[in-house]
Length: 65
Figure (tube, rainbow, N blue to C red):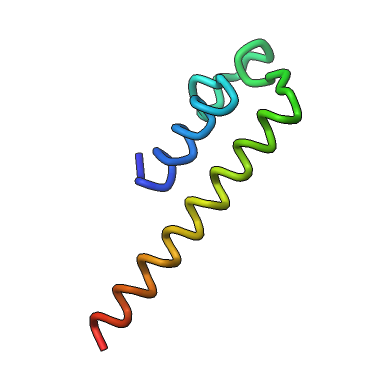
């Protein structure tokens, strides 16, 4: 599993209570009722992770210049 996939899985687990993002071919395992505030928290966590990755990439680019 890539770091990106691990991050998404961690967000799904922590914010949405979803054990895995793997398709398990079972409606009861693949479809989830999620409160809108939990979905908002998950989207915010994903956005913040992207911002942090961008900051790290910018710092790395500046250090290599």
